[in-house]
Length: 370
Length: 209
Image 1 (cartoon, helix red, strand yellow):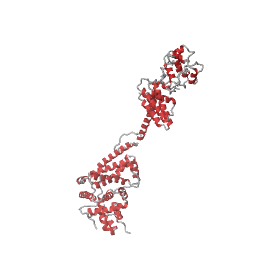
Image 2 (cartoon, helix red, strand yellow):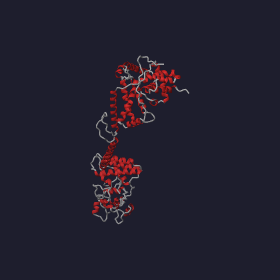
Image 3 (tube, chains in turn yellow, orange):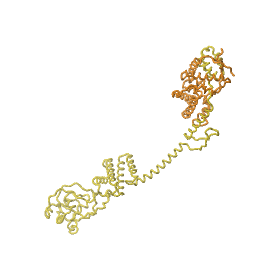
Image 4 (tube, helix red, strand yellow):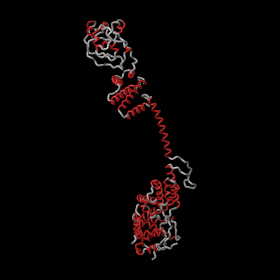
């Protein structure tokens, strides 16, 4: 089988390179391919002969030094522990064993993490006690917001909003009333309660709901009443103006009027009279007419019983405004039947109170803390 | 039939036998240590391959100073990418020569090509012949050879320079140019045939020492 010319040429070239054969000897071994091989082998011989290119020794050494310096630098950058170079090695210098880069980095990260944890714990504790105006107060609000955002179910969110509202209330208690942040806190309390109500679908504690209503209706009240404590400025109710005479003079005849202190105050403070519907004019000094008009007994039980409200606005008006002179006395002379008719669980031992004309029941205009 | 050189006095000088660049166990060990930026291992690899790389680059660019610069760049690039080298059946020498080939291509693309400085070559040339006239002829011939090699295709140039100048084996050349051994032989055949036409002639076979 005829051999491939490529293989023959390759074998001859390798033989010439190894100086095993000359060009002529290779041609003699392949006489049938002499004409084809001869020019190629000659060219190969020329190439082999001229392969002795020797680089400049000095430049070669300088290049070596630069390269090894670069290797050294790479080794430092990689953080690999290095053994001291042998004496006479180019670029040898004094060095110290060092920890690997990743070990140093790991240590730094650990220290920073621990420090951050310690500082964060202290910061959070201080922030919890801060008040509006304090630099840490935004941290406190941020923590509350994050807790609310992370809450999964609605109940938890609602409870967290209520908790935030209670926290605002406690802040209000600790702050002065003339503080610039006072109104903002009240607004924030209302917002938290509204949010809780919205999330829970209206199922909010009644007490807090009442707080919300009060915050919505007025913001000029004594803020301590938010917690249910009686207002500082509240004075014992002394009944209508004429009740003083009643108490002094005819206590056996008239209804027993208990002092205001036994009556729970409203969050709105002293009860203000509502505007009653226009009543027919009562002639002054006409005792009989007053007697007719007043058809409702008023006793102390109205004030005692929290559940019972004054249905008749006229009664209330009389209670609040007070009656003057004889008309007050006439009140005490109410028809007993009318008293029994208009009142619930009243003390029947009391004398017949004044009866007031029956009117349409008015909506409740005051709320009592329970 | 005697082969005569067209130039008088030209003789075939025995070339110093080059150490084959194979990937034996010691080479593997050196490369593995070099991956960890072992200075000594990298120095040994440099000593083993620098001359071949330099010869290869010199015959490609035709300028000694540029060849030195590019040869240094070859080893610096090898240092940067030594961690990426994997033993996938390709010799380490093939990987080095591939880097050298790419840098030579970049050199020509950058337009830094310069003519061969023949005077400089004569001053540095380490003559292995006792006849100064023959040294001069050899350097001239080298210039002629370089110009003759440039007439070949890129792949033929790669094979010729790696095979005859750098002394690489067919397996190493195949790994460097990403060809099969058979393809390398074929390229060698076509390249030598083309060179024979360019170089012309015949030469007198020298006496062996």
